[in-house]
Image (cartoon, rainbow, N blue to C red; front, side):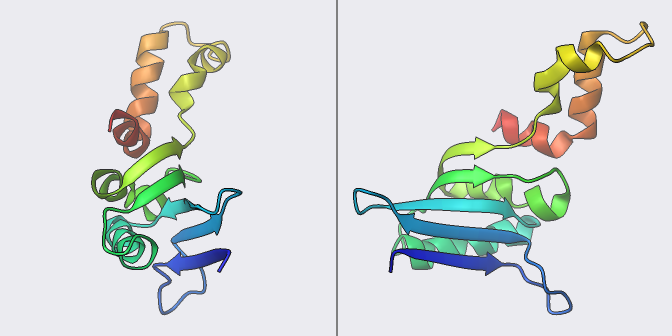
Length: 134
């Protein structure tokens, strides 16, 4: 098969998925694996087990690209588990502190510094901060 798409963590009472993994054959005949969101912590565990069983024949799974759509726990809660239990090559997520200069220029309260703004953003988006630190 040239591609596969799997939806992980679909609750019984809903029709949406908390995590998606897909793989496709690249031009060299090798698979490229992509994970889009990782659900809650249990979703990350389920995703890792799925990748291990179906995508890597029981070996430590490899994720070429891991995308985090946004910082809600039902989308990034399982990312730490994936980072710790899979070989993740690249992670893409919005880190607002990377835009600190642009954001700072919009603040009218000059008691706030770039450092305090950075700290505030990292506290507000602590899940993303944890992912970056890993």
